[in-house]
Length: 272
Image 1: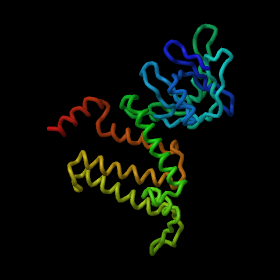
Image 2 (image 1 turned 135 degrees about the vertical axis):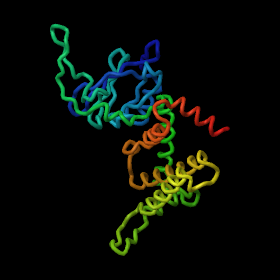
Image 3 (image 1 turned 180 degrees about the horizontal axis):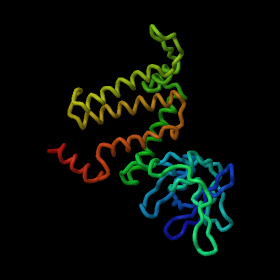
Image 4 (image 1 turned 45 degrees about the vertical axis):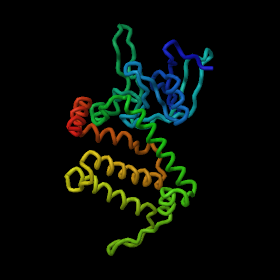
Protein backbone atom coordinates (compact mmCIF):
# COMPACT_ATOMS: atom_id res chain seq x y z
CA UNK A 1 0.00 0.00 0.00
CA UNK A 2 1.33 3.43 -0.91
CA UNK A 3 2.61 5.55 1.97
CA UNK A 4 1.68 9.21 1.61
CA UNK A 5 3.43 11.70 3.91
CA UNK A 6 1.80 13.79 6.65
CA UNK A 7 0.58 16.27 4.05
CA UNK A 8 -1.00 13.43 2.08
CA UNK A 9 1.60 13.62 -0.70
CA UNK A 10 3.94 11.22 -2.43
CA UNK A 11 6.84 12.22 -4.76
CA UNK A 12 6.66 11.02 -8.35
CA UNK A 13 9.66 10.85 -10.67
CA UNK A 14 8.67 11.18 -14.33
CA UNK A 15 10.84 9.33 -16.86
CA UNK A 16 10.71 9.32 -20.66
CA UNK A 17 9.66 5.81 -21.68
CA UNK A 18 11.59 6.03 -24.96
CA UNK A 19 14.88 7.68 -24.00
CA UNK A 20 15.01 6.85 -20.31
CA UNK A 21 15.69 10.51 -19.47
CA UNK A 22 14.34 11.83 -16.17
CA UNK A 23 11.92 14.61 -17.10
CA UNK A 24 10.71 16.03 -13.80
CA UNK A 25 9.79 15.47 -10.18
CA UNK A 26 6.37 16.37 -8.82
CA UNK A 27 4.00 15.41 -6.02
CA UNK A 28 0.70 13.56 -6.05
CA UNK A 29 -2.01 13.29 -3.46
CA UNK A 30 -4.48 10.41 -3.47
CA UNK A 31 -6.87 12.15 -5.87
CA UNK A 32 -4.14 13.14 -8.33
CA UNK A 33 -2.84 9.57 -8.27
CA UNK A 34 -6.34 8.23 -8.91
CA UNK A 35 -6.93 10.64 -11.80
CA UNK A 36 -3.60 9.62 -13.29
CA UNK A 37 -4.63 5.97 -13.24
CA UNK A 38 -8.14 6.64 -14.51
CA UNK A 39 -7.21 8.95 -17.40
CA UNK A 40 -3.80 7.57 -18.36
CA UNK A 41 -2.28 11.07 -18.16
CA UNK A 42 -0.21 12.52 -15.34
CA UNK A 43 -1.95 14.64 -12.71
CA UNK A 44 -0.15 16.27 -9.80
CA UNK A 45 -0.87 18.28 -6.68
CA UNK A 46 0.45 21.83 -6.57
CA UNK A 47 1.60 22.73 -3.07
CA UNK A 48 1.77 26.44 -3.93
CA UNK A 49 -1.73 26.58 -5.44
CA UNK A 50 -3.20 23.87 -3.21
CA UNK A 51 -4.89 22.33 -6.24
CA UNK A 52 -4.69 19.35 -8.58
CA UNK A 53 -3.39 20.03 -12.07
CA UNK A 54 -2.91 17.95 -15.19
CA UNK A 55 0.49 18.18 -16.80
CA UNK A 56 0.12 20.05 -20.07
CA UNK A 57 -3.25 21.63 -19.25
CA UNK A 58 -1.87 25.02 -20.34
CA UNK A 59 0.92 24.14 -22.78
CA UNK A 60 -0.62 21.03 -24.33
CA UNK A 61 2.57 19.10 -23.48
CA UNK A 62 0.74 16.20 -21.85
CA UNK A 63 2.32 13.03 -20.50
CA UNK A 64 0.80 9.68 -21.47
CA UNK A 65 1.47 7.11 -18.77
CA UNK A 66 2.93 3.79 -19.89
CA UNK A 67 3.83 2.25 -16.52
CA UNK A 68 3.88 3.08 -12.81
CA UNK A 69 6.53 1.67 -10.47
CA UNK A 70 6.70 1.80 -6.66
CA UNK A 71 9.95 1.87 -4.68
CA UNK A 72 10.89 -0.68 -2.01
CA UNK A 73 9.56 1.44 0.87
CA UNK A 74 6.34 2.31 -1.01
CA UNK A 75 6.87 6.02 -0.40
CA UNK A 76 7.75 7.23 -3.91
CA UNK A 77 6.68 6.56 -7.49
CA UNK A 78 8.37 6.26 -10.86
CA UNK A 79 6.18 6.89 -13.89
CA UNK A 80 7.37 6.04 -17.38
CA UNK A 81 5.57 8.28 -19.87
CA UNK A 82 5.33 9.32 -23.48
CA UNK A 83 6.04 13.05 -23.40
CA UNK A 84 3.86 14.80 -25.96
CA UNK A 85 4.82 18.25 -27.18
CA UNK A 86 8.21 19.89 -26.99
CA UNK A 87 9.07 19.16 -23.39
CA UNK A 88 8.20 18.74 -19.73
CA UNK A 89 9.90 21.81 -18.29
CA UNK A 90 7.98 25.08 -18.03
CA UNK A 91 11.25 26.88 -18.77
CA UNK A 92 11.22 25.51 -22.32
CA UNK A 93 13.45 22.44 -22.01
CA UNK A 94 12.74 18.77 -22.62
CA UNK A 95 13.68 17.93 -19.02
CA UNK A 96 13.59 20.01 -15.86
CA UNK A 97 17.15 18.79 -15.25
CA UNK A 98 18.79 20.88 -17.95
CA UNK A 99 21.59 22.31 -15.78
CA UNK A 100 24.74 20.64 -14.47
CA UNK A 101 26.20 21.66 -11.10
CA UNK A 102 29.80 22.81 -11.46
CA UNK A 103 32.57 22.36 -8.82
CA UNK A 104 32.42 26.08 -8.00
CA UNK A 105 28.69 25.88 -7.28
CA UNK A 106 27.54 27.52 -10.53
CA UNK A 107 25.21 25.95 -13.07
CA UNK A 108 26.00 25.03 -16.66
CA UNK A 109 23.11 24.73 -19.10
CA UNK A 110 23.65 21.47 -20.98
CA UNK A 111 20.42 21.19 -22.97
CA UNK A 112 18.81 23.10 -25.80
CA UNK A 113 15.73 25.21 -25.14
CA UNK A 114 12.99 23.79 -27.35
CA UNK A 115 10.26 26.41 -26.94
CA UNK A 116 9.76 29.93 -25.64
CA UNK A 117 7.63 29.89 -22.47
CA UNK A 118 6.36 33.42 -23.16
CA UNK A 119 4.85 32.20 -26.42
CA UNK A 120 3.51 28.84 -25.23
CA UNK A 121 1.92 30.21 -22.07
CA UNK A 122 0.79 33.53 -23.53
CA UNK A 123 -2.77 32.26 -24.02
CA UNK A 124 -2.88 30.04 -20.96
CA UNK A 125 -6.06 30.32 -18.87
CA UNK A 126 -5.72 33.07 -16.27
CA UNK A 127 -8.48 31.78 -14.04
CA UNK A 128 -7.47 29.95 -10.89
CA UNK A 129 -6.43 26.33 -11.12
CA UNK A 130 -9.37 25.43 -8.89
CA UNK A 131 -11.64 26.03 -11.91
CA UNK A 132 -9.54 24.14 -14.44
CA UNK A 133 -9.63 20.66 -12.91
CA UNK A 134 -13.42 20.51 -12.26
CA UNK A 135 -14.17 21.81 -15.76
CA UNK A 136 -11.81 19.30 -17.34
CA UNK A 137 -13.32 16.45 -15.33
CA UNK A 138 -16.86 17.42 -16.35
CA UNK A 139 -15.91 17.82 -20.01
CA UNK A 140 -14.12 14.46 -20.06
CA UNK A 141 -17.15 12.74 -18.54
CA UNK A 142 -19.45 14.38 -21.07
CA UNK A 143 -17.22 13.39 -23.97
CA UNK A 144 -16.97 9.83 -22.66
CA UNK A 145 -20.77 9.69 -22.64
CA UNK A 146 -20.87 10.73 -26.30
CA UNK A 147 -18.24 8.12 -27.15
CA UNK A 148 -20.41 5.50 -25.48
CA UNK A 149 -23.44 6.62 -27.49
CA UNK A 150 -21.31 6.46 -30.63
CA UNK A 151 -20.10 2.93 -29.90
CA UNK A 152 -23.51 1.61 -28.79
CA UNK A 153 -26.55 2.11 -30.98
CA UNK A 154 -29.16 3.54 -28.62
CA UNK A 155 -30.96 5.47 -31.35
CA UNK A 156 -34.41 4.58 -30.03
CA UNK A 157 -33.61 5.99 -26.58
CA UNK A 158 -31.17 8.78 -27.44
CA UNK A 159 -31.37 11.44 -30.13
CA UNK A 160 -27.63 12.03 -29.71
CA UNK A 161 -26.89 8.37 -30.40
CA UNK A 162 -29.10 8.56 -33.48
CA UNK A 163 -27.27 11.66 -34.74
CA UNK A 164 -23.89 10.02 -34.24
CA UNK A 165 -24.87 6.85 -36.07
CA UNK A 166 -26.60 8.73 -38.89
CA UNK A 167 -23.58 11.01 -39.35
CA UNK A 168 -21.30 7.99 -39.65
CA UNK A 169 -23.43 6.76 -42.56
CA UNK A 170 -24.15 10.13 -44.17
CA UNK A 171 -22.80 10.81 -47.65
CA UNK A 172 -21.95 14.34 -48.78
CA UNK A 173 -23.56 15.26 -52.09
CA UNK A 174 -20.94 17.84 -53.10
CA UNK A 175 -21.66 21.08 -54.96
CA UNK A 176 -21.73 22.22 -58.56
CA UNK A 177 -17.97 22.74 -58.53
CA UNK A 178 -17.17 19.80 -56.28
CA UNK A 179 -17.57 16.11 -56.93
CA UNK A 180 -19.65 14.09 -54.47
CA UNK A 181 -17.51 12.89 -51.60
CA UNK A 182 -18.04 10.63 -48.65
CA UNK A 183 -18.00 12.88 -45.58
CA UNK A 184 -19.40 11.12 -42.50
CA UNK A 185 -19.32 14.29 -40.40
CA UNK A 186 -20.50 16.76 -43.08
CA UNK A 187 -23.88 17.24 -41.40
CA UNK A 188 -22.27 17.88 -38.02
CA UNK A 189 -19.91 20.42 -39.56
CA UNK A 190 -22.84 22.32 -41.05
CA UNK A 191 -24.69 22.35 -37.72
CA UNK A 192 -21.58 23.53 -35.91
CA UNK A 193 -21.14 26.32 -38.46
CA UNK A 194 -24.76 27.40 -37.96
CA UNK A 195 -24.38 27.59 -34.19
CA UNK A 196 -21.09 29.47 -34.44
CA UNK A 197 -22.81 32.02 -36.65
CA UNK A 198 -25.65 32.40 -34.15
CA UNK A 199 -23.16 32.81 -31.31
CA UNK A 200 -21.38 35.54 -33.27
CA UNK A 201 -24.73 37.22 -33.96
CA UNK A 202 -25.51 37.18 -30.23
CA UNK A 203 -22.26 39.02 -29.51
CA UNK A 204 -23.19 41.64 -32.11
CA UNK A 205 -26.70 42.00 -30.72
CA UNK A 206 -28.27 40.66 -33.91
CA UNK A 207 -29.64 37.42 -32.43
CA UNK A 208 -31.69 37.94 -29.28
CA UNK A 209 -33.74 35.57 -27.12
CA UNK A 210 -33.46 36.58 -23.47
CA UNK A 211 -30.44 38.88 -23.29
CA UNK A 212 -26.76 38.67 -24.14
CA UNK A 213 -25.60 36.67 -21.13
CA UNK A 214 -28.24 33.88 -21.24
CA UNK A 215 -28.13 33.85 -25.04
CA UNK A 216 -24.34 33.46 -24.97
CA UNK A 217 -24.70 30.50 -22.61
CA UNK A 218 -27.42 28.97 -24.80
CA UNK A 219 -25.62 29.32 -28.11
CA UNK A 220 -22.24 28.50 -26.56
CA UNK A 221 -23.61 25.23 -25.20
CA UNK A 222 -24.95 24.40 -28.66
CA UNK A 223 -21.52 25.07 -30.17
CA UNK A 224 -19.99 22.78 -27.56
CA UNK A 225 -22.56 20.06 -28.24
CA UNK A 226 -21.97 19.91 -31.99
CA UNK A 227 -18.21 20.23 -31.54
CA UNK A 228 -18.08 17.20 -29.23
CA UNK A 229 -20.28 15.17 -31.58
CA UNK A 230 -18.02 16.10 -34.47
CA UNK A 231 -14.93 15.11 -32.48
CA UNK A 232 -16.55 11.81 -31.47
CA UNK A 233 -17.43 11.06 -35.09
CA UNK A 234 -13.86 11.86 -36.15
CA UNK A 235 -12.68 9.49 -33.38
CA UNK A 236 -10.52 12.11 -31.70
CA UNK A 237 -9.07 11.50 -28.25
CA UNK A 238 -10.03 14.18 -25.71
CA UNK A 239 -6.41 15.28 -25.38
CA UNK A 240 -6.25 15.92 -29.13
CA UNK A 241 -8.35 19.06 -28.73
CA UNK A 242 -8.83 19.75 -24.95
CA UNK A 243 -12.05 21.80 -25.24
CA UNK A 244 -11.92 22.99 -21.61
CA UNK A 245 -8.69 24.90 -22.37
CA UNK A 246 -10.35 26.71 -25.29
CA UNK A 247 -13.34 27.58 -23.12
CA UNK A 248 -11.17 29.13 -20.42
CA UNK A 249 -9.03 30.92 -22.97
CA UNK A 250 -12.10 32.50 -24.54
CA UNK A 251 -13.34 33.54 -21.11
CA UNK A 252 -10.05 35.21 -20.27
CA UNK A 253 -9.89 37.04 -23.58
CA UNK A 254 -13.13 38.75 -22.58
CA UNK A 255 -12.41 39.40 -18.93
CA UNK A 256 -8.63 40.11 -19.10
CA UNK A 257 -6.02 39.17 -16.50
CA UNK A 258 -7.97 40.58 -13.56
CA UNK A 259 -10.56 37.85 -13.91
CA UNK A 260 -12.05 38.02 -10.45
CA UNK A 261 -12.71 41.77 -10.43
CA UNK A 262 -14.03 41.83 -13.99
CA UNK A 263 -16.28 38.84 -13.41
CA UNK A 264 -17.83 40.31 -10.27
CA UNK A 265 -18.36 43.68 -11.96
CA UNK A 266 -19.97 41.99 -14.95
CA UNK A 267 -22.27 39.94 -12.73
CA UNK A 268 -23.33 43.04 -10.81
CA UNK A 269 -24.04 44.88 -14.04
CA UNK A 270 -26.11 42.00 -15.43
CA UNK A 271 -28.14 41.77 -12.21
CA UNK A 272 -28.92 45.50 -11.97
